[in-house]
Length: 233
Image (cartoon, rainbow, N blue to C red):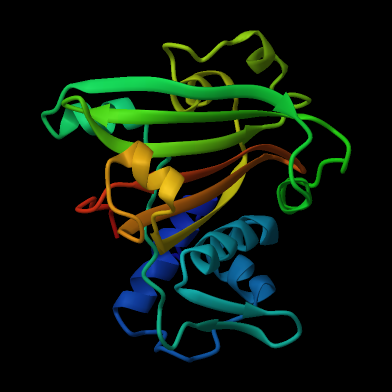
């Protein structure tokens, strides 16, 4: 029987997935090298490389330089997480969305912010604090820094009625980001804005997005008690 030819990386990926799921290649097992697979599949080695990189990124393969590629012994289930437009999130929960800008100022940020965003220690950034509401009640407190060297059009926006969250999603592309989830305690100032007691537990999201090597924005979102985050595995 003639060996089938695989002409694109997706078809190679599908065949590798089939072999993993059928246990032709078992967890922890070393798979053939790229050159041998390219000959077997009748395609370029670069095509095989692309397919294996995609599967490694999904956690199904473990690739190590000079050690070859193995089927992951314990494949990692990765979640898909999109940056939410808070207005849509509130409306999808059946609530009326509201927005209040608290502060908008161009200032030199604290060193912890400029260090994380890799901006100059004396470079000003746009700082915005705003409150998002659901049915006229506090929903989330947004504390955001914007690198206007990367998103210069933000300088012309007052963010009086349109949130920075919504504006950035529409006007500032990003290539990748970093995100952290934690439980925090409400300070006296944040508690007063959110309408909760001091030291109340708050779900906290810290996010930093990048356009290649340049930071776009750094934000901390504090959600009122009872907030739930849902994602897809």
